[in-house]
Amino acid sequence: MSTDETQILIVEDEALIAHDISFTLKNAGYSISGIAHSANDAISMMKKAPPALALLDIHIKGSIDGLMLANIINQEFNIPFIFLTSYTDDKTLARVKELKAAGFIVKPFDAKELCTNIELAIERYKSEKATPTDWGNVDNNYFFVKRSNSLIKLCVDDILYAQAFDNYCNVITKEEKYLITHTLKSVEEKLEKYNFFRIHRSFLVNLPAIEVISEDNVMIGDVSIPIGRSAKADLMQRISLL
Image 1 (tube, rainbow, N blue to C red):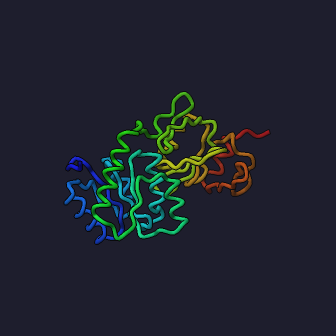
Image 2: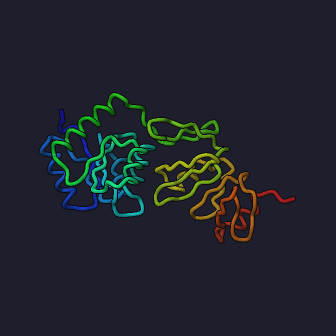
Image 3: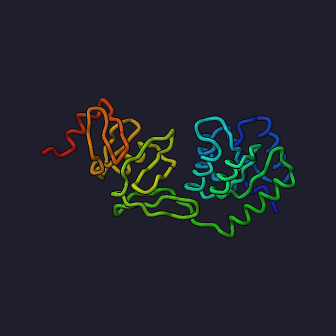
């Protein structure tokens, strides 16, 4: 049964629709932890107070849409989410399946269907709950990152580079790319005792992974990474020349 203790986050960039959802849920006995009009707002709210469940519109304004936000939730927050959207094309549905959404409701929504889906999602989550985590402290040359309901061990030496992505960061290895809800500056601080160098305002590289250095960029595998104007001299001092 729903209670005022069950906090729901609404991620919807249309104010009238968000208000309608909020009104429906409050009438059903839920509390609203917040109404976010963008992915950035939603992530800030979840960091401050993780809700019991998030309702996500897929096509929200900003560089991060609802599908990308769902992936971040899977990796970092470990809470159930339900898509509430008017988009039902095959490509969207395929992505929804990959992200393991707890539900998918087509607008205009039915209040009873919405509340039933929320109850089922929360109960399923409680029964399958895993211990949430962040990417944590780098210790003993490794740390753990969140992927769906699993914690994956990542060795520092396996990191090729990290790239800023809005207020988040992509950590790239030879095999995988992990999106984490930390800024590049935060990642740099965690890896400062290792052999990493901020080569550009958007890139942090593992120096041993560099294969070629040219005038304006370095190559790590087949990826070209630009060198910031102020970083070139410092980079040359950090590498070994024959």
